[in-house]
Length: 219
Image (cartoon, rainbow, N blue to C red; front, side):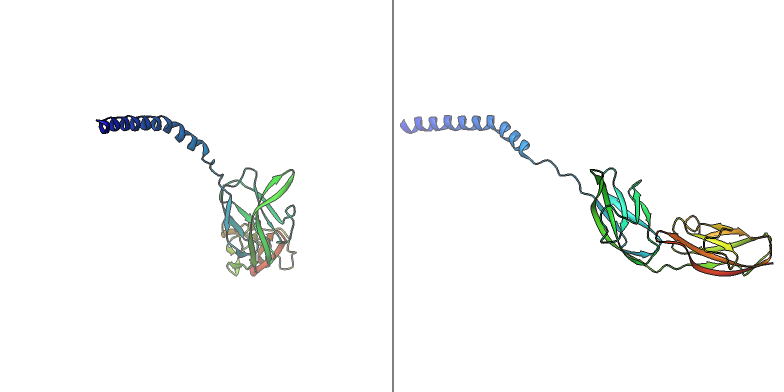
């Protein structure tokens, strides 16, 4: 009899414990949810070639760049507020011009804080000696079309030009921009004579540098 009463009491106690636990569980679960740390914001990242021909455009793959961030190319020991090239971001795979001089530089992702740039990320960048090739007929009639191919660093401001051999590097004349198309047809001058086809590099630290020449005779 005593054993039966003890068993009944233990059963009631067990049911009470279960009910209490069941009542407390939602509150405990809610407390655990509240204690979970907030998700961390995604950190910015960048990826680009570490070696490139001087003056060639550098494509950069970006992710999670903060609003207002910029890409810059500077010398490794330059402070954050000094750069050779600075480009505002317009898409996630921007391209920026590289210095036309051979050297060791640094690609940087910066953001402005308190009116001054702050470097968020940096990556080494080395530029190699630039070169170019030209292809065109050796002779062309006066005022006729001259088919030309010019391949080099293909920077945005690079140009292929037809000028007199003694013309200065910044001379003007029939031209096209290899960054838009490496092949074009130039109109030959009306005056016969010997001319020079040039590939002219125009990049930061190297403006109007002639990388390749080819003689063309206008008849």
